[in-house]
Image 1 (cartoon, helix red, strand yellow):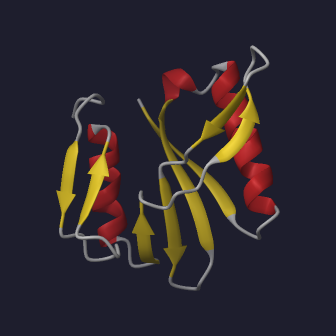
Image 2: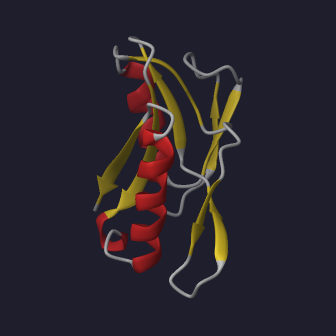
Length: 116
């Protein structure tokens, strides 16, 4: 499935929204996986979370993780779907490190889901 595909995932059962917008085919695949995952109680892309970080160039930026996921045990996680070719990018590393810290401060987990 192409990474550049985007559109609307309609009528998800584990989201509070009737439509969840995806920005890649990988995200759409992951939405379908979240819907089938028995350990997932709820998920959304419409979470409004923006985590500030400093880019490699020294600029203040806002990072919006792909998914907010609540597990059936009540634990919350941020999930990021990322192609493996981007994992070594200095700004990706900075975003992910900042997200890990942000989540740790809130007793949450940060999960990177990789795709080739």
